Length: 259
Image (cartoon, rainbow, N blue to C red):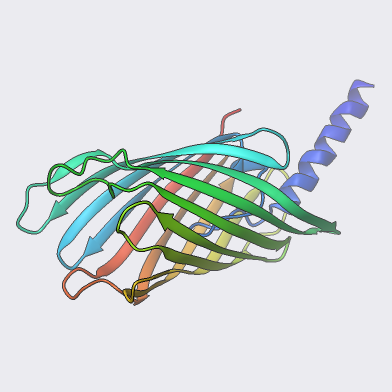
């Protein structure tokens, strides 16, 4: 009986690992809420190089699965800014809380298609009384639809959402699409190397314009409980004023399944 239980557990783990074989995208959200995208911790650092400043943001994200369709979580960013001609400042930026709920799932042999609704609330917790500011000084609500078609050979992901602000900041439309390709044969426990190519953007209303980034990246899954990833965002279109545009954003991070 114990041997049978171990065998069943192994099959469940194997199916779960194959359904998530290439891992979640680096910059785009995923409709998968199992494994390294749920019940764990994610942390990554963003090195942001702008024409008039440099910044470093360390993100800590903790998701928790209420059940297999419903997830809640919180995101805390630690921000360090170094504008040209100003004193550098560090501290926690705007905190976020979010919830995800799966609305569609269709599984096939070694493939799955899923969709979920995600709601994110940004809290104006970052200090805005001193320069440079560490927050937006605005409540923000984002509602987005996240989709994914994932197989053992590749994954296609997409996200589109609308962000509403509480102050005179303009609303914006966010959008992303990602393609993932595994470089190593599938096996269990996972030992997977994945390539990603993503497009991540947002259109800012009030005639401000569009921001669009090309985002290649690489990811290594080292077993069931940890992955390492890195990617760079290169601007293709920028709505920022001259002299304030982003040169690149470099991301290095890890995800750990802890409970």
